Length: 267
Image (tube, rainbow, N blue to C red; front, side, top):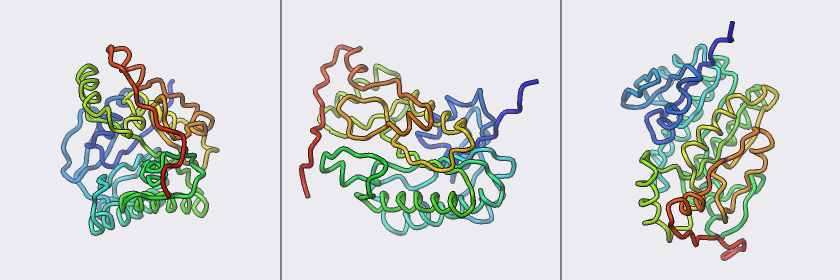
């Protein structure tokens, strides 16, 4: 008899990353999740609620094996009131509810904006570098990482921080290439994350050994010229990104000339 499927709960399940995860993981796990509007997502049971609502969130995680916490205001232009409620208070309520429910592991959706100032400087980055947020959004995600470290160290929970790159809206490959070509002058393309690599990284996080109690990882595709070090994700999670934006462009006969200089270009 095969073991029962793990129950995986995704906050912010109706967002871009949440929907990509449902599409890629629905055959392997029992998927549940929440969003403010409660919009249905095929392949998952979705509940309507706010992560900052204590009464709501504390009723959500019974029987959950892994919690993927995506729910947040994702805008780098977000103002303080929104960041405070959704990304800081909401993050605490989610972690505490998970602790009380006995959730085995949390995968926290952090961001490359936690070290966004280094990106502006065109500096190579590892997860061990001190945080240098470029926005209140980045500040709030740095708080979430620190909170996860606390819950791991002081409450014995397994917490993995995924500094997720840029996953575009879902579209067919040729349409995506045309869309990316229009952005070809933007250095941020090197933080591109394909849906396939995003799903594989989260699957690796769910299945990583219980002995992995904490880790912080950049999660991006294996893009030529990128600044972010993925080596600890390869080592700890046994995750190897398969896609490279340069190869995607080459497949469609498009020149790829973007290469970020490996130097500091500012103070």
